[in-house]
Image (cartoon, rainbow, N blue to C red):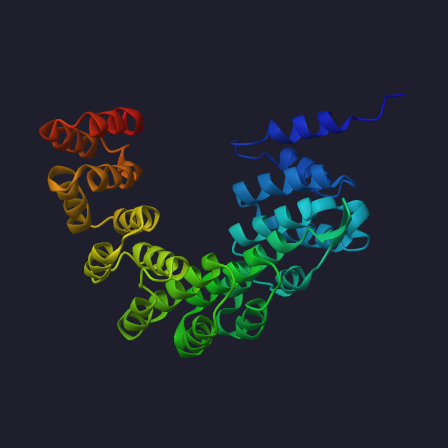
Length: 323
């Protein structure tokens, strides 16, 4: 009698399918692995299904998700299988939103040192993004509820999803949220970014209200939102903010936001700071520019600017971050 296949053996079989054009036999193998009792095996199979866009296995994924809801703390620790299934279905642009709705509402307390902890926030976050894609404005009620979720990652995902849904309703909800506030700056930043995605012309003045160095946390949140927006109008707002910054740490965030804009005028401005500003600001601007270091033409341009200054600390920073 053949021995039972080990967990490592199952996972190795699944990994061998990555990057291949699946044959009918391999699709049948993935269907079998999705139905495995091990959440690790099911998660690995779901990931391959999503990468390969095997929409014919969507129902199998949905069935597996329901199975892992029966006794989740025992059968699917850390929601590994359920999360992989939701991510796979979303990659395949699955339109039946029932599974996403279940996932968006799922809470799973598991034992940790000193008590229990909810392991499902990543699952809820992924499901909210999928719901927004599948249902559009019909997902607004659950997205609004999620803005009050105890988990930061879920509130962040709700803000991102609301920005993607767009429209007046989503904009008003995000506007209320930024006025009420959030204890986590990352959530505020995503809400501000969502407002810029919904209607940049209407909401740019509101976002700029938070760009005050006197409150470092909200200023950083607004700067990052403006940087991610890629809006041309963001550059002048960030430049004005930089002039008012007295904190080196906050100045670095504002410079990074300018770099994230990825607009030619923003890059020109940062390189000009490297060329002409005092040493500390020049080094900070150079640090912000390193996110573009993989572009050979850009790297050559920055190298020339650094050589022109002939400042040892600036040259050392370039050698460390750009080579």
